[in-house]
Length: 277
Image (tube, rainbow, N blue to C red; front, side):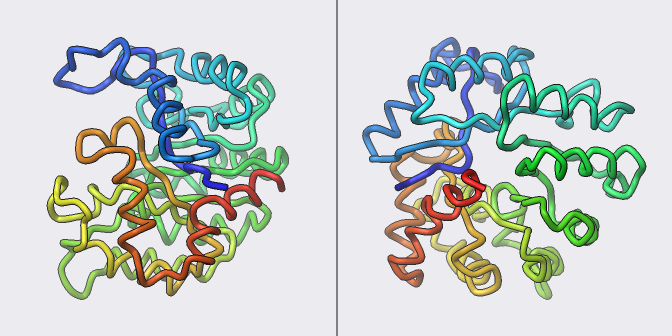
């Protein structure tokens, strides 16, 4: 069982400069074709209501209804590009969105307002997350880690999954304080990391198989163990740097220091367990 923990789909390509196939490049059928070609069983669709796609939650819901055996929706709830970002009423918006789309999890992209987790609105938001038994898929940088650890201690039933290796960089200079923050967060058993975004972590975004990132993956593996890591492709955005197959093999083939039995957990076993819970 392979489950891709981080994918997107859009009706219109959201990034600039525009592409000639902007009405088809981001469509879910492109993802499904790649998944079938690479024997990937399921994918989490991380919704993002960005440029030209204000109804992305609705589009992804329709996709899940059409392909329920292959797709799981993590709706965009008050992400950093929305007008409701960290505004009053976040917990009720989460409640309405979760019920409307029958969610198992949601995604929340963060800016640099590091105190929000401890605010009244932030605490209500994660109280609702715990009440609804949702997975919180978070896009954040390592500076969020102290606040995330406090939050994870307070809401121990909530699973927090950090996107793209939590934003660490292969080029960070010694003593690598951001890496140390991410590694310290492994002390909390409900904090997970997505092994996705190899090209973001690497010093050179096109240099497949991104061998300069492998020591960082090894560190995450040593600290978080095989049970709290989840592979993700970041398709179709990953096409800026590599193919879907390469996003899979950068981990599966080239991270040879991880035993096959542990790779099975990272490639799908862990996420399957979380989704069933």
